[in-house]
Length: 127
Image 1 (cartoon, one colour):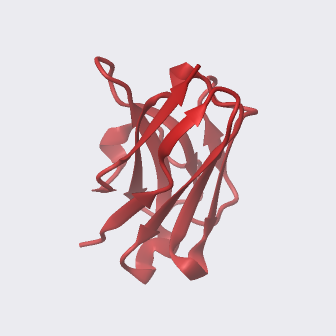
Image 2 (cartoon, helix red, strand yellow):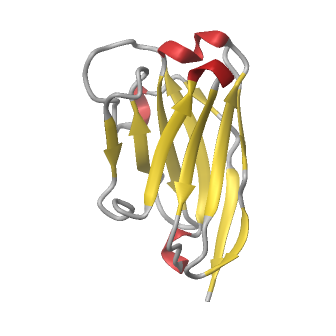
């Protein structure tokens, strides 16, 4: 059972930046696709960004494209989400998820395809 632990959330002013990290407990992380999802109060969970196991294929939701950047360091068993130009609509709990189906395609966008989930980290944007 792979465990994921997110960190890096917090309170930031509009226009500011945060960098989220997701550390996996197992080295098999290197063959997993990774997705970042978020859920705001009263809203459904939505995908923010996803990266393939190799890092070669990346997906961004339209709402964050150009502001957020997803990356990974397999040697450190860690995925990152750099978030810039934050606004109040980015306020949510952010979750890291891993999909253990190794493939050559783009990482899945549907939360149902992800097998392992972190507990989430709160991001609050003021102003």
